[in-house]
Image 1 (cartoon, rainbow, N blue to C red):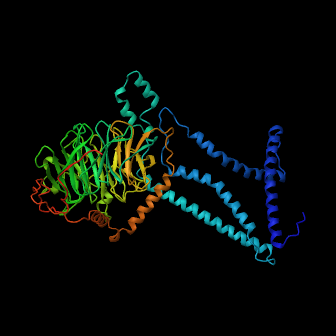
Image 2 (cartoon, one colour):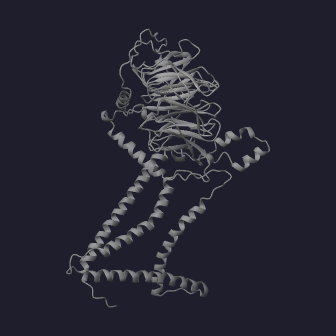
Image 3 (cartoon, rainbow, N blue to C red):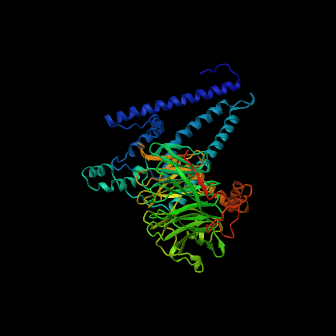
Length: 624
C-alpha cells in the first residue's frame, strides 16, 4: 500500500493507525474462523491442525475472555437472588467479595486505559524528521512499561489495603446466623391467631427489616444542632432538645410540633426525657450549663414552668431514668458527681458518689440504670473504665464505692487517653454496651466478675469529633446502632459483629443521637444538622452496603493518623475544656437583693462557683 505524501511525522502516525486497524480486523476474522472451525469439528469430527487454525484459536480465546467479562455481572445478579419469604438480604460486609468484583470490573477499564495510552503514543509530537523508528518505538515502550508499572503498584496497594482491613476486621467477626423471622409463615400464623402477641416483637427484631431501613422524613423546627431525642413510653410523642435552648414535643407520625418551649437552660441542651408513668406531664432536662431542670407539661399542650432541681459544677451530659419511677432519676456531670434526684423531696438532689480513680476525680459523660436491677447504675467518662455502683451500699472508703469495673484488656495499660462517650444496658440488664472515643464499641457481660474483658467488639465507625451516642436496636437488643463522624449510621448484628446496615444520616458530617422506637420497627436520629430524621423499613430490596468499604478505610486511616500524632498538642481533655470555656463565656452574675438562698445540696456546696450556678430556679414558659 502506497502512503500519501505527508511529512515524516504524519507518515509514521498514519502507518501506526493502519497497522492497528489491520490487527483488529485480523482478530475479528480469527474469532469468526474459530466459530466456523468449531462447527465443522462438531459435524465431521475433524480437528484443525494448520498454522492458520492455531492463530485463529489464539485470537478466539482472547476474544472469548472479553465476552466472559461482559457477561459476569449478569451472572452475579442471578446468583444473588434471595428468598423473599425471609425478607433477609445478603447485607454482609466482605472485603474479599467486593474486591473481586472491583478487580473483575477493572479489567475492561485497564483495557480502555491501554487504548488511551496507545492513542497518546500515536499522537505524541515528533521531535524532528531525523528521528528513526527504532528510537521512537523504544521510548514509547519504556513509557508504556512505566505506566503499566504504576498501575500494578496501585493495584498492589489496593490489595494490601484490603488485606489489612480483612485482618483488622476478621479477628472480631463471627458467622451470621440464619434469619429468625420469615414474613410469609409469620403472617399465616398471625391470621389464625397463633403467636399473634409476639408478632410485632419478632418483626422489630428481624434482620430483613433492618436491612430495609430508609429515610422517611424530617422534623424541622430547631435552629441549632439537635443533641437529644426521646420517645415517650407509648411511642406516640418524641422530645428533642437543641443548642438553640429549646425543647420540642413532636407528633412524629404526622411530623408536626405539638409544643415548643424555652428550656430555661443557658447553654446547649444535652438531654430531655419523659419520666415514666407520669402521663407525659414531666420532662427532665440537663445541659452544658450543669443545671438539671424539670418541665411541667399540661394536658392542653402547654408548658407550665421549668424549675432547677440540681446543679453540677461542669456540663451535665446524661440523665438515667428509673424504669418504674415517675419522680426519681439520676444525673452525671463533668464534675465527677452523680446525683440522685427525687422530686417528692424539698431538697430533690442527693449526692450519691464522686467518681474517682485513686485520688483523681473522673469527669462523667454518661450514666445508665440497669433495667432489671434498678439499684445498679453504670457510669463512664474521662478514662477507660466502666464503673458499676449499687445505690444501697456505696462506701467511698472501700474501692471508692465501686461494685465492679470493666475495661477492654488492651486499654487497661494503654497510654492513649481514651474516654467513654456513651454506655447503655440491654433490655434485660445482662449486657452493657460501651462506646469509646478514637476506639471501637465494646459489649460486656454485666454479670461477669470485676475486671472481666469484653465479649464482642464492633468496628468500622469513627468516634472522635463529638460525644457520640450508642444504643441497642430491637426489642431483645438484637442489634447495635451508632452514629459516626463520617455522617453515616451503622447497624451491627450483635452476635456476629457484622455490619448489616449502613446509611447516610447527616449532611453536617456527624450523627450523635440514635433513638429506636419502643414498639415499632424504626428509629429517629440527629446530629449536627438542625433537623430530626425518621427511619423505617420501607425499602423494596435489602441494603447493598454501597460505599461501606471506602468509608471504613477512610475512618481507620484517620484514626491511625490521630493515634500517631496524639500528644499534648492534641490533648482531648484540653480541647474539651477550651470548647466549654469559650461557649460559656459570659459576664459574672450578680445576686439579686433579697433573693432567697438556694436550697439544693448541689447549690449550697462550698465548691460551687457563681458562674456555674447562675440562672433562674423557676421559669414560666408558654408553648410557641
